Length: 147
Image (cartoon, rainbow, N blue to C red; front, side, top):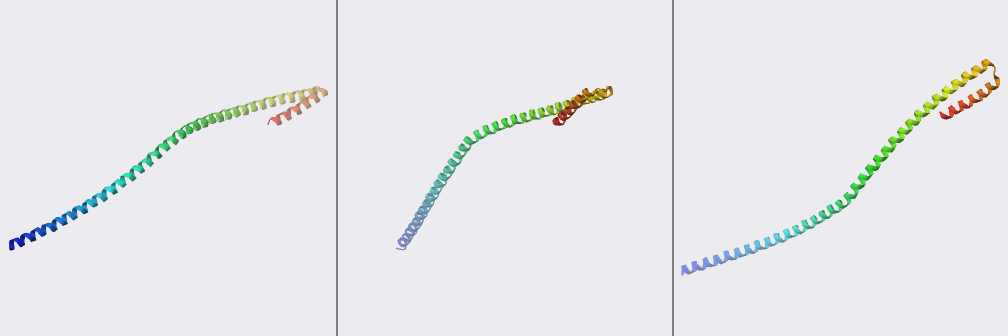
């Protein structure tokens, strides 16, 4: 009888241990299911985020190409404008030099006319002298207008 009681206690103890282990298995199973669902949700979220990033990259690739072409076109236009400005500066420099040369020529002509006037004064040709004075005055006005 003591043996039977001892066996019954062992059986009861084993049943409690079995129930405890089954309960622990159920809890672990539930925990793993929960973790699995959380991981699935995380994977779905990350996949969704990856799709968004991929779409953003595709969008910016589509936008970046035309912007790069526009940038190249603008650089070419800027280079053309710089060339035009350089040509304009060169033209202005040449124009200034030409005006200086014209100014020198006019000064030489004035000096020649003044010499002729002085010579005519000496010779006493008053009519020609008046003409040359008028011509000299007009030439002086022309020089002042050029300057």
